[in-house]
Length: 426
Picture (cartoon, helix red, strand yellow):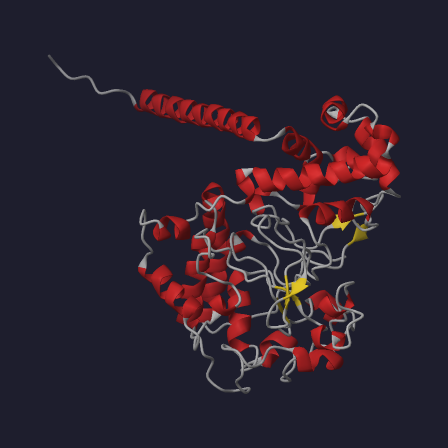
């Protein structure tokens, strides 16, 4: 019998059909998984999920928690500093942090060594997830509601208002303070219970469980991350399991003044120094006799999902992960690159310069000296940091790596590197 070849068009049709069916199967599985996850949440957490995604609770009707804390970016911002306000006309002052891996955080305190630790936001001013969740609803540069009663009035008209009544009582709307507190606690329950906020399934976690292995670049980066004479990242971004055996959060929840540069747009506007006081201005610290010692210090964030972030540091001054690692390596050896002039810590307010971390590696060198990290070391550290991306976001991290690859090529070609510009400011 003579073999008749299948026509090319038929092959492509079969292939397209297979792709579509595969995509549909994935969508069905994803929806089933989401419904299973929702079923596992408490009634309070399910309400928290609804509140988290409800734009009607903002004065503009255009902003929810999820607007700024985007799941695809690890529940961090898609651009760094966000717009908000009654007409979305306002811009904030600080980079929007990630909400993942916060549920184990403690309230703000001074530890046994007398060092500040814990708390929420860049300055640690909120003591709980619920307290953190409350502030954006009333912040004029964010959801911009006039008061708690305004939020509760909107909440009482939401599609899930009846469920809110079932959980918190039919008379909850006559008690705005209690209703607002219940809403923020529901948000805290959602972030605590939903596995999406603490997956622990990155490549790093799989390697730690013996289910995978690093490639050579990642392995070198991991060694540099821990090396106290090279990257020394683990000094603050703790990489060891907790005392109870739970996986590392890649932060010790401490505070540090890094002497970060100004965003370029502020320098172009004539601003000379970063005037954000940070830790020393927050309520737990400002009345202390030694408060000035903490000016310019900000919370050490978790490095989990750091490869997905679009802006870095409290002021969103850098836009590429590789630039962040390079800043650590060359802040002191090449200040021109970061501050626009060959003067160390030029963008730091003079009163805060004594608080800048200069003692720990990779800092502590003089302009013109050899950095502790080579260009290859920087690339290897970035490769390792990509292993901290949660499995549900890993594909996106790979797609975002293209821009980093272009930047790396420019560096290796000895092309001049411009200080990145923030996308927006507030």
